[in-house]
Image (tube, rainbow, N blue to C red):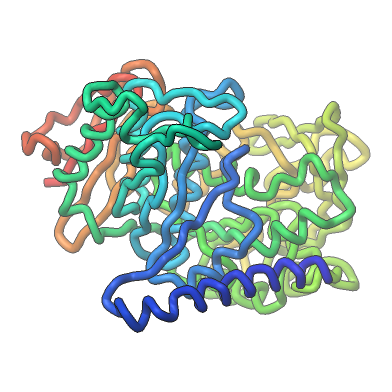
Length: 467
C-alpha cells in the first residue's frame, strides 16, 4: 500500500511540475494547445508504467506520444508488433476520446534498441499511417538532423550525416509528407467503437509489487494486448478505457486481469450488466481494493452475483507445466494460471482437462438482469481467444465499420467524419496480399474509383474513402 501511494505521489508531483511549467504559456499564448510527450515501454511495447497517464490526461489539451516500435525483430512478427502499437494508439486516443498526436517517431532506425535495425522499404509509410488510422492527426520526428557527436549521433533523422535529399530515408520521409497532404480531410475525425477494454495503470503497479503468483508470468499489459488482438484481426474498433471512464454505451466490455478493483468499479460493472451489457473478465481480477488489501470473506459478493460463481483458488504453473481447457468440443492449451471456480447461478461453458480439478469449471457464463457476464479462469493459447471472441462477436452482432476479406497480416481500420468514412488498408506481412471489399471505394490519394478486389505488396498501405 505504501509503494502504491509513493507511485501515486510521483505522478501527482510530475503533474504539479508540468502545471508550473505551463503557467506562463497559458498567459502568453492562451490560444495554443499545450501537451507533453507520453511514451511506451519499448522493450516489449507496452504502455509506459512509471506515471499514471489517465491522471495526466486531464491536464493536457491533447494527447501525444513517442512511438519507437522495434520493427523486423527476431522475437515477434511485424504483425504481432502492429497489434501492440494499435493497442497503445487506442489507449492514448481513448484517454480524451479525441485524436492524438505522434510527437516523435524515427524515419528509420534508433540508436538505443538492443539491435538497431533499419526500417525495410515501405515500413516507414506503413507504420506512420497505422498511427493515423488509429486516430493520430500528426506524424512528427525525432530528430531533424543527426548530430556529430554524443549519444544520439546514430539515432535516425530526416537529414543524415551526408546532408543528402537523395538517400532512401529522406525519400521515405518525403513520401509520408506527400500522403499526409492528401489526407488533410481526415484530420479531426475519430473512431466509433462498440467494444471497450479496461486498462489501469495503478493495477499494473499493484501487480509489480505483489509477492504471489509468479513474478515472471503476470504480464498484465501483455495479457490485455493478447485479448485485444482478435478484435484487431477482425477490424473491429476498440476503445481502451481507464477505470474512471464511462462504458455504459458499449456492446461489450473486456476486463483482463484487474487484480486491484475498487468497490465503486464493481458497482459500475454490476449496473452495466444489469442494464443489458455484456462483460468478459479474466483470472486474477477483483482480488484487492485500492490500498492493495484483499477483500476478506472470499471473492467479493458483488462479483459473485454478477458472474454467478465464486473464486476458490488460483493455481500458478511452472513454465514447463500445462493443462487443457475444453470449450465447444475443442481442447486448448493452458499455461501460467488456472483459477478454480465454484458454480453458483452461472453456466459452465468450459472445463479443465487435467489435474485434481479435471472436469471443473474453467469458463463460465451468467445471465444477470438483462445482460450477460463471462469469466475466463485460465490463461489459454491464442486459438482459444480466437474462438471465444469470434462466437461472442457473432452473438452480439458486432460488425466492422468496413467489411473486407483478408488474411490476419492485413489490418483494415476506419476513421469516421460527419459525412465520410476513411479506410486504411495495411499489410504487415512481407508477401503480397489480396483484399476484397463489400463496397466500392475511392482511393483518397489518386481520387480514382477502386474495384472491390485489390492487391497489396509486402508492407503496402492504401487509404480509401467510402462512396
